[in-house]
Amino acid sequence: MDPREFYKRVSGALPLERLWGKRVAVVGLGSGGSRVAAELGRLGIDLLLIERPGERLEEHNIVRHLLGFESLGKLKLDEVTRFIANLNPSTRVSPCGLDVVDEPERLAQTLEEWPPDLIAVCMDNEPSKHVLNDLALGLGVPQVGAGVYDGGIGGEAYVARPGGACYGCIADHLRLHQFGPTQHSSPDYNHLHSPEIPSTCALNLDIEQIALLQSRLALDLLLGSNSLTGIPPEVNLCVFANRVVPGTFPRPLHCEFYCIRRRKDCLNCGECPSDLEQESARILADLQTAPSQTPLASG
Image (cartoon, one colour):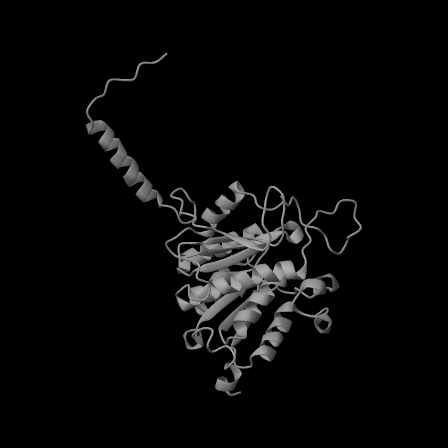
């Protein structure tokens, strides 16, 4: 393959040479994660693909997944690896089957042996996101994650940089500002005729919109600039509306940007206990040496 011929239609859009040699761990190869992996892989970025062992493409996945019927019943990990090799044979892909929640020690060892420049968080459950958040903080590696809201009304993409607000801080903000409908439980797609089925559907184009936003943020992080999006570096949360939802999204196809601050009381990235003890001691000392004041009248 001649790189000059292969990349000539995109070489003017971004400095590709700054991406080659970069390493991204993509965790989760569902409808969103498979697209993030494909977008980064087609540009020649080294990939570590992580998916749960035995996770296969089911018929109900196909209507909105990157893979098609030729991959039905096959392992997502193997099939996404093959798909990327077909997009760009020069891309180095390392597939890894493990469960993030059940095997955190193995995950930590894997990331230490294959140190990434970035972790793309593409899991759809909170326990996995928090496990990855803890590991990323320990390794000093940035994260870029995303999620699609129930019904496909929109979604979010976030960036957690070392030294800034971690995913825990951002998740606290999202809980306080609930953009999408509350999801009480996950549907069992293998038993769709059960009495109670939560509304958690989304179209392929809804998911792809958010996955592409996540991919753009990932590329900005890898390039070390905001040259691809123009989004200021202090922005770490993007909330995108796919359609109008009264009371939630007044405008369609519109993105809002947020600068979430690091929380000092965050259990993940906040001040360590020794720092808090020193601060408490300083405040106590100030109170003891402060001049006495006349108390305010009560009643």
